[in-house]
Length: 45
Image (cartoon, rainbow, N blue to C red; front, side, top):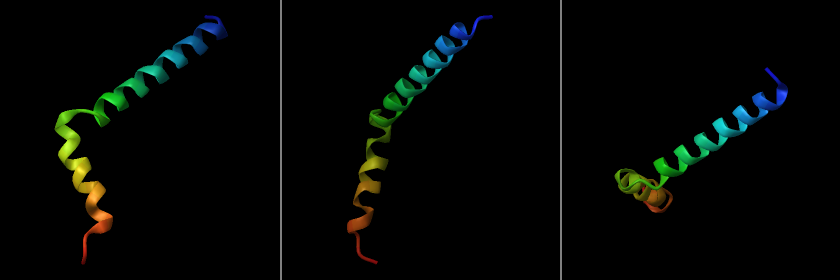
């Protein structure tokens, strides 16, 4: 196994992880939780 193949595999795995995080962050199921978390600094004790 050549080092170039390992680098390609690591790049593809990193890209797949990045795409997975994007899908998770922009999914409609998480929108309510993210909106609630965005309002936390502005809420009074």
